[in-house]
Structure formats: C-alpha cells, structure tokens
Image 1 (cartoon, rainbow, N blue to C red):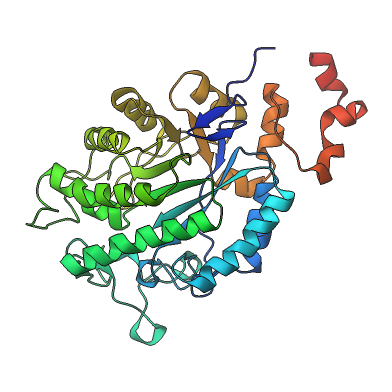
Image 2 (spheres, rainbow, N blue to C red; image 1 turned 180 degrees about the vertical axis):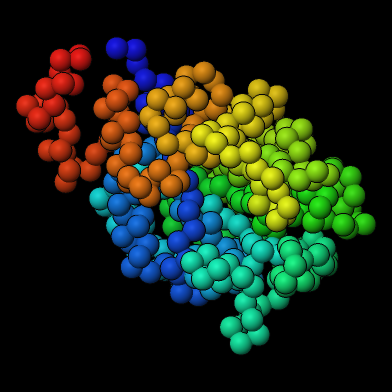
Length: 371
C-alpha cells in the first residue's frame, strides 16, 4: 500500500507534527469573562486524544472588548491564564496532539449574543460594550457602530496582542495562529469595504495591510524563534469591490518575510452581502493559489470531511495541512478512522491503545483480507 501523505510528518521550525491533520479553532461560547470552564476540559480533552497532529484552541480574545460574545475565551487576564492552564494540563496528560492557540480581536463584530441565541447585537440592558474597528462603519443594519481606532487605540490593541502572545508562551503553547479572517478586526483593516481610513492605515492595499503586518511582527518578536507562528486569512470577501485572493497572495509574501510559517486560508465573514459558492472543499483552491504564488506553506479548510478527500489535497500539493472543524465535532476520533482507511498511523492515548485495530485483528477480518 502506498504511504499516506496525510499521515506523513511535517516540520514547522522546531515543531514536528506526526501528520497533516489539524483540529480547527471552533468557538464554544462557554467561557466566563474570558476564562475557560469545565466545558473546555471536556471539549478540548476529547479532541486532544483524537490523533490529530495539531489541536488549535478556539479564537481567543486579546482583550475584553475584543470578544465576540460574553461567552468567548480570552487571554487578557491572570484569571484567564490560570483557567486555561488547568485545561492544557489535562490535554497534555492524556492527549496526543500538539497544542496551539488562535489569538484574535472581534472588532466591529463583537458585543453580540452567542449564535444559539441569534447572534444579534447586545441591547443596552444586556451589558454591551463599545466595539472597535478601523472605521466607524457598522457590520450591518441594526449592528453597533464601532469606534474608529485612533493612534492610542492602535497602540493599545497591538500591545494587547503582544501581551496575549506572552501569556501563550507562559502556558507552553507550541504554535500561535493570529486571526485575520472572518470579518474580525485584522480582516477589517485589510478590506476596503470596512476600512475607509485616510491615514497610513487606509486607502491603498499596502496601507490597509500595514496594521495587521505590524501586529504580526510585534507578536513574532516576542514569540520564541524555535516556535512556529501562522495566520488565518479570508482569501476573499465574496463581495464585489472587497478583499481579493490576489491581495491575499501579496499579503502572504509580506508575512513570509516577517517569519510567518504558514497561512490558514479561509474566506468570507466581512459583509452580510457575501455570496459564497459552498461545496465540499470549496476553499481549497484558495489555499493552493496562495501556496503556489506566495511560496509559503498553507492549511486548507472548509467542508473537508472525508479521509480520501483530505489525502488528495495533501498528495496533490494543494496544501500542506488540512484543518477540520465540524467533522471533528461529529467524530472526535476522525483521525483514527482516516488512518485505517488510508493505511496510516494515528497516535492514540495509552488509555485507549487496546482499541487500535492491530490489537484485536479478529474484529477486522475484512481489513486483514484487503491487506
């Protein structure tokens, strides 16, 4: 049997992953003032045991005003850091995945209800906060109008990202991913739809890239040199006149020069007028284009659900890794079953080792016959 490319190792700086599978960061909306709860123990604990090479903790706000909802995870206080340490200790004790975290700021899409309660902006009686953005432009009708970040606000926001990065290092994370996608703050700077500034941070594509690049450079400077740092971007807004994949390629080249180790290529989220062409692997071609034209490793995301689909993405060179979200919620052991299908090897917690097919081959006669 041909060796599986999905289950081949990959090295990012000093971090070696045993396979090309990542658990994508997925918001859970179960934090308390940014602090992880027992839900995170259960949720991340089971995902850490599932055999993926990398587990990325959900989008984590670098400040209280950077949260999407009251339930969003944060890394802006000692209490946040302490609560998350408890979760990570469990993941390390029983899990097999390397641990990463996605740091972000919601920008004008913050101060809302959780999705299960409609995701609408918080009312005055629901403890809202003043959102922040490049320009004082609301996300959509009925949404809060954000405060445009002034010079002091930009400096404070950059400092928040740096301090969260320092906290992530104290917690022992092995990789950081900055969130510059899905219509949140750094993406808002990139897109001409949400950025109407007339200073050095607005206007031309180069100016609109300036603040996200400054944030990345500042975080990279305090993050250990042997540890990788990547970024998630929206390759396109799926809106005419918005951010484009060609601009994403240009951004990726600049990020590579700053020491970015990979680009996690998603799309959309900036404008409710978006018209997305959904389907299995619908964003993979964006990852392929960024990888080819910017010469940087990429991670593909978006409706990747099948082992053979994931294998083809890696084997064909469209991306260097795949990140699964809902497929992992549906089956936290996705990597184990993919390994069986593809003839690969996925790590298993020692507590579950007796479930590995080779340890009870009598239960899998059809697999033995195929071999």
